[in-house]
Image 1 (cartoon, rainbow, N blue to C red):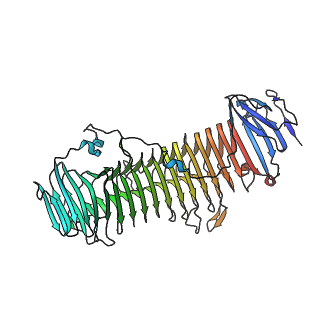
Image 2 (cartoon, rainbow, N blue to C red; image 1 turned 180 degrees about the vertical axis):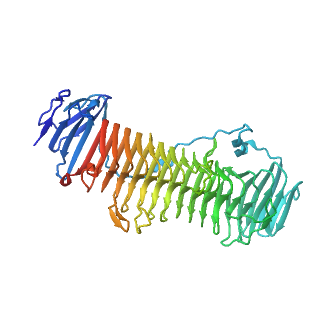
Image 3 (tube, rainbow, N blue to C red; image 1 turned 60 degrees about the vertical axis):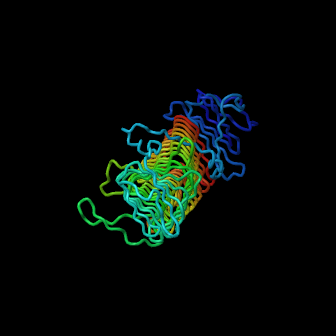
Length: 574
């Protein structure tokens, strides 16, 4: 039985029972094709209603699902059985799976650094291009010992014990070139001035501690010599640390936290290869910050791959882009008291802990510390396997404004992006798959994006798939705003009960959802939207329930003044 209710201000053009589909034309030049199935019902609500709509209710040929199209009347130009000859025909149904695009590994966008030369700008000190060395020492390791050339330098002392070398320097504008091979050696440097340390083909293992230990709070230009391959390894057990005195004369143990450790800023550049294995500590560690500008870096670490305090930043020079591979038993990248910024490079991260983590958490936090994670360019591929591990974890905000991120998380309760504050997505692409399950009431379900603040999407592409019980593609404690770009969300998990009660698998969970532009597609085996209100003034939104009936049965209120909304749900639950 077909039911057509007409508003006097609108007409249906050339409608007849022989029509195969209707075309709803928007006054902005776009149109949507509404195919005819069984038992079509067309309603044009009165123009005097607060939010007047035209709706089409169809049943699929197999009579298993209703498909409901909703359009705001103020935006409708015409409804016709003839396909428009001009304008953009929108595709409403996107039933494609979430897959990883191999082309992103080579086609990613990057931000090329601008070298800061103004000495009044603190950032100028990050660039080795601004550093002109005046004294050069070549250090050569062998199985029998270590040599320095020249043997002596004013204001620099060398202490040797076998192939273990300690340098104490008060001299500025130094460059050390290190090469050779030793299976029982190390390099420790004390310096009151910044310096450059260049690896020129070095294979060095310290069975009892770090291979390179820089006990200087000054900047270190850590250069991986062009065309060279360098391999460093620490020991599974570290010897007792050296005990010194702090500024007040109290005993203080020297840090020795990984294969490469620096008290000061570690500024990595050069166009060679650096292979780091850590058996007892982190791979590359700084108690200040780490900035990677170029080089091929491969890390395999028992603990964290990169571990730093104030900042972890990856960019690129005009000529060279870094390539980073990390396999970590802990976090691939952990920034403890600062933020993470990725602007360029290709990064392949595999970890049992978090993939990328800004981990600052204090009872009385310092307001000047912003533990945010920002992806502005480059390609980042992350795989985590640990329970409650996230591909990207920020104690602050997560922002993506470029680049491509591909993430696969498989641990119980794992997340693709987990932010303690807000998430902003402006451009680039985020593709994530979460397959973790739930085993205990203490482990929350796996999910795509989880944020404690608001989520705003203004551009780019998001594609998330979650398969675990109770999983949520987006779980937002605040509000979600979609004002551009596209988001495709799939949840295939079942609902479940635990000791704390009934938990739903959901496409989106938030306070309020606002769509004013862009494309939002939610395909859920259970609940598509768990929200109080949906406000739609533009854009397109497609909601598909595989098993759970009409999305509106879950209580959210729709206020639609524009845009295109399609809902697909089981016929027997209507």
